[in-house]
Amino acid sequence: MKNKMTALLLGTALTLATATIASAQDKTVKIGSLSDQSGLYADLAGPGSTLAAQMAAEDSGLMAKGWKIDIISGDHQNKPDIGSNIARQWFDVDKVDTIVDVPNSGVALAVNNIVKEKNGVYINSGAATSDLTNAQCSPNTVHWTYDTYMLAHSTGQAMVKAGGDSWFFLTADYAFGAALERDTSEVVKSSGGKVVGGVKHPLNTADFSSFLLQAQSSKAKVIGLANAGGDTTNSIKQAAEFGITKGGQKLAGLLLFITDVKAIGLETAQGLSFTETFYWDLNDDTRAFSKKFAARMKNSAPPSMVQAGVYAGLMHYFKALDALGSNPHDGAKIVAKMKEIPTEDPLFGKGTIQPNGRTIHSAYLFEVKKPSESKSAWDFYKLVGTVPGDQAFTPLDKSTCALLKK
Image 1 (cartoon, rainbow, N blue to C red):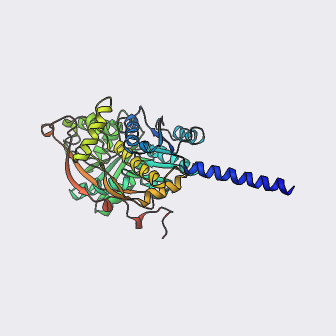
Image 2: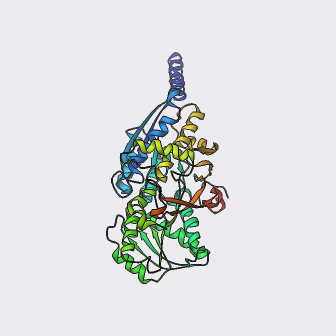
Image 3: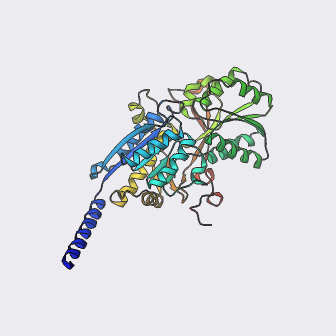
């Protein structure tokens, strides 16, 4: 009996030792690019985000060190239940380690919970809601590119200072729109302005006429567009048709992407002010990457801010894996390592990841050029100002993230 027990214990020890060695040598990683592949956010994220993930894998240098990196993609169709089901299948069946991109704040918050439950890694580049690093922060999540706090405290504040002290909001009726209206309203009021009203519209709206008429009749100096993608381009185009801007009211495109400007056209979009954290023509590094990216895109488009964030976030993730020496398949451990290492990449420059998961880097105030000022395809932006990262994003002492000890 004693011999049998000794043999059993020895066998268990050998099994554990073998598993430990296998884990220590595991250099495989699987990444899921979860996005809107065919809807109103497909141009600013979608297939371009999957390409950005692939380029990050190629540029990471890990494959030359023996790593195997697989990239897969999924379409959440802007529906939280579909996004959640894909995320669960990826973790449970496909053994995905990390989910990236995920535009649409409603889907992003739903996926955030699943990634935490499965102890995966979540590098969100596409969603705007600042709740990802506040009330719903997670030890498994890094929010890379931008958020509603940044948009409100840059574009919103700049417009109030320029005299736009009365606002009416046109808001997409889901988590993102609510967060952006909330954060911008706080900035408007704290800056001495007032909010005179607002109206919510369904996601992916084609006809904004009734909503724009309400905004026009409000007499507000600024109509804040708390929407994105196709909703923003449709509302700006139709506002022009109604003669709203010619009547003296200003539009605040609180979240505008380069693909939106392309869709609107410079004739209508000229003069719009907005904030992004990336533009393809910022410097030699952004131009070099964008040239490689555009060469692989079907429409030859440069990367959007979201797609650039997928690339940069994953490059930093790969640095963390390299530092760990192998893939521990422990999302919280990997994200902790990502927070230890200062961020530095050719697209967003130097920065840090705060304890609440918020990546800190500069934001840029832009204005859309006049048609006569544009010298080449996709030459759309004039740089108006730079907001340092420590001023662009939520200060830690104002964050409501439970991970922070206060």
